Length: 110
Image (cartoon, helix red, strand yellow):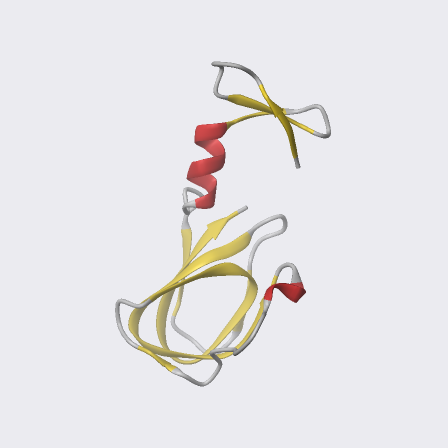
């Protein structure tokens, strides 16, 4: 959690006493940490301390299962089993993802 912003510095103070740069936070939330190419039906888990923040469909895909972080983030309908067309992008905070078909880029963030 961010406690306060330091005037004109671009830095913010977190509750734990660390300073973070706003530009770095923005980049990390937009996939600056890279991506994982997923083209199989195995379960993929984001690295410790990270989540998949966007799922970009490279080749028509269907999600077999997923887990969000926090788990209560799922509200309303889920999209498992639905065909996601090439070019589609789904945003969220996915900790785990399993495809039943297709190929996606799963962008990493914090």
